[in-house]
Image (tube, rainbow, N blue to C red; front, side, top):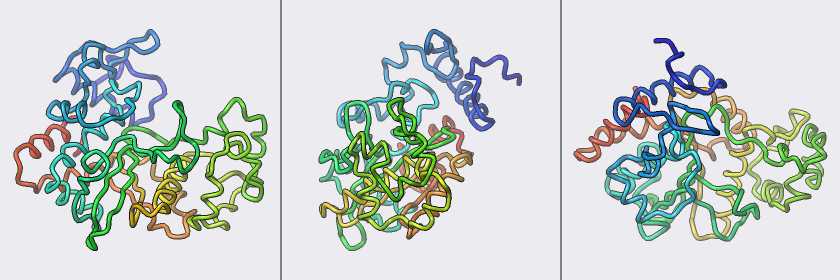
Length: 326
């Protein structure tokens, strides 16, 4: 089928293009053939405003749960069929609203998971989570480190733990360094050398913003100094930046002592191989690579298929169909 029939962005890689076409075909079959509009142009993968106002592409059975029981900042592109935020909420909510099902399914990717801590967060979980004490000193109305979903649980020793998860769908890279990209950064040459490792005051995050990234990097002992110095540039200038900040947030929250363990994971679409290189290079910087875990949305769906529950099976079929799990 010719791609000329689809109104697509021009900068998609092969995976993104195939996935967008799948999402568009699903949208046309189940919702509408009307395109959405972004910056005055029509795109088939974007929903028209009449559907966005009804919070599509949220899975219909969880709409009331999400609207009534969870408070988070909605992404401005939530009405895109490829919205990673929507896909994340659609993936985790049907599992987490039932603690018994959560225990069965989540233990498949996190063996230490015993039961959901429903007395924590928003009945055990929270979307777009960040610690309100702002331990990285980087949060403002416009920016800051957060996790797509945080899950509080008890482990096999009945210790309270927190699981921070970053979700990716069609993205070809994690978020790169905002300090390097900033128009206010007049010393980008410092970023392109590893001088920031010896003198953290040469980092825009440090001297201009006062963020605690480097302070926590040294304090935590999570990162291998030799590995960070292998290239003559800041090791966190590229997509490893988002992983670095999330790992530091997990450490900073754990240091407060409320949770026995706070750990960070990435969940991504099993066909999205564009993220693998960044994940590998990030793990190579860690003193203990097992600190950071990854799994796929397909892993969760496969675990859920064995749950004898009609609502879960209906959701599995819906999610599998929409998000190309095969």
